Image (cartoon, rainbow, N blue to C red; front, side, top):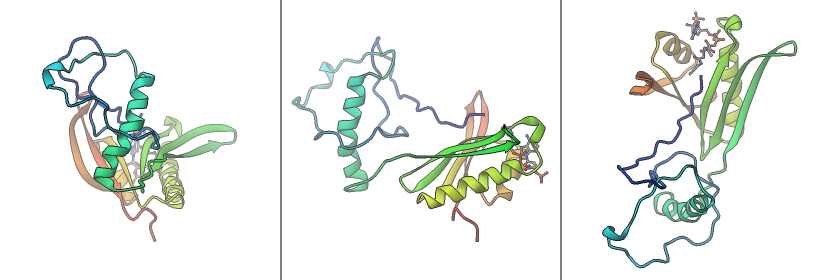
Length: 191
Ligand SMILES: CC(C)(COP(=O)(O)OP(=O)(O)OC[C@H]1O[C@@H](n2cnc3c(N)ncnc32)[C@H](O)[C@@H]1OP(=O)(O)O)[C@@H](O)C(=O)NCCC(=O)NCCS
């Protein structure tokens, strides 16, 4: 199961053309763009038009790279680093890949995006070892805590709570009308 949160656009009902994206999307573009701030004088809102786009264009990427540092400075202060460091742990039986944990360390925290063990190997401790190895590596890369989202089932609850995660939120009807849980482990490495 993929655990990514695909950023959801907060699009008002629009004509064709690009969305106004949420200012709170996850996953910043790399910072370090040129000075932000629109060159335009303040426009009355009646002069702003809205278009839906088929994909993220180079112009949008440049816009985000230029303007996020400005917005970030106001929220987080100077020099905040949004470098994403991938964390990938594989489990093999011989040469065969039987499980994987994937995520990233970013801005002092880790997020576990994907955790999957092949059906025939489940229930033998592989998933638990993958999570521990993921947390160890994330701590080495500077993360202080780890977040993840999982379906709200008794299996998942049991699995993550045994690994030292605590539920911090319930996300009603998150994907395909199924509730999800947000879990946090902090401190990251258990003594
Ligand atoms: C969740 C998952 C990664 C756990 O991996 P695993 O190798 O089975 O986990 P472990 O053997 O280390 O731990 C098993 C424990 O997890 C729990 N568990 C969670 N999901 C389970 C599942 N689908 N089947 C069986 N047990 C499951 C069991 O209650 C078991 O507890 P117990 O040992 O006290 O009986 C694995 O079941 C899986 O890949 N499931 C499908 C994909 C998924 O749901 N990924 C996680 C999304 S957040």
